[in-house]
Every structure is written in C-alpha cells, then in structure tokens.
Amino acid sequence: MITVISGTNRLNSEALHFAKHYTTLLSAKTTEPIKLLALENIPHDWFHPDMYEKEKQSPSLAALQDEFILPATKFVYVIPEYNGGFPGALKLFLDACSIRDYKANFFGKKAALVGVATGRAGNLRGIEHLTGILHHVGTVVMPQVLPISSIEKILDTAGNVTDAGTQNAIERQVDAFLAF
Image (cartoon, rainbow, N blue to C red; front, side, top):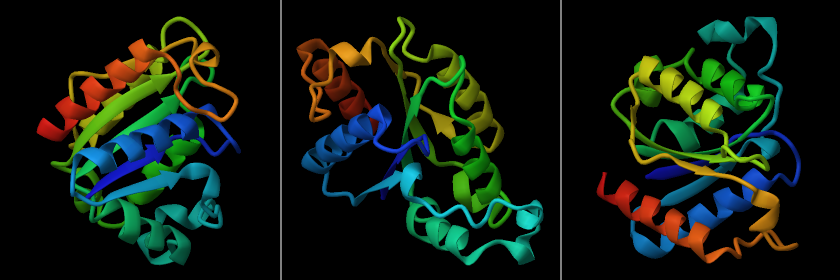
C-alpha cells in the first residue's frame, strides 16, 4: 500500500491539491492500493502531554496508524514550505506515531518527497529537513525529490496542475517511485 500524505493541517491547502494529483496518478499507474491522508482532516485529540506514553495514546491516532501508516510500504510526502521548513503539524504527527510500534511505522519503508512553495526553491530546505528525520526513523528516501516552485502560477482555480513541465516532472517522479 502507498500512502500519500498532505503535510499540513491548513484547510483547503495547495499541498492537498498536489497530494490529490499524486493519488490520482499513482492509482492510474499501479494496482497497489493508494490512500490519501490529509492532515487537515485528522482529529487532534491526541495532542496532549501524555501523547508520549504508549498506554495513553488516543484511539483516533491509533486508528490513523492502523489505516494509513502501519500497512503502508511506501509514502509520498507533499510538504508545503512554512517559514523555511515544513509544517509543524507533520512533525508532530510523525512524533506521535513513533510512540506505538516505532519500527513498524517507518523502518525499511520507502518515501518520495515533494516540496511545494510560492517561492523559487520549492521548499528545498523543508525537503532536506524531512529527509534527515525520515533517515533517523529508518525510512529510505528516494533521491529524486521534487521541489515545485511558484505554485500559484501552475494551479488553476480548481486546484488542477496546468503547467505541462510540472505535470511531466511529477509523472517522471511517480514512475521512478513505483520502480523504487
């Protein structure tokens, strides 16, 4: 199973548009199950001081892990640029998941990283930071990361990717990821 993660809890984010694009493209290219986890839709009842104790993990977080994280063999992280990095909501989610079944969540699994930003660098710093974190938990990160910049110029009002060059780059990354 491949889980595509829209890495922000901001409502109606551009990251979610790209995550949906990846989900659709992956679904068209493989028979492997594809699931989309949009952090904007998850409950946050697990964010409390006791979240770092396995016995006190919230049932909603355990359900997310059981559906999206533990059965996945691969992840696509779509991460918007927030203050020169990636959203704290994603880091908090990864930290919370690491409490139960630490190794089974991420170790030995594979990941593709997509940075999205209105600026020129396509969230390269956020991609590098997340790469370091994923390496720490034992995830193998595909070298062909994709920083997508100037996203306000390549999305239409419905959130569709309209730029042919960007569409081609995404398709090449998806093909490489499926072979990875």
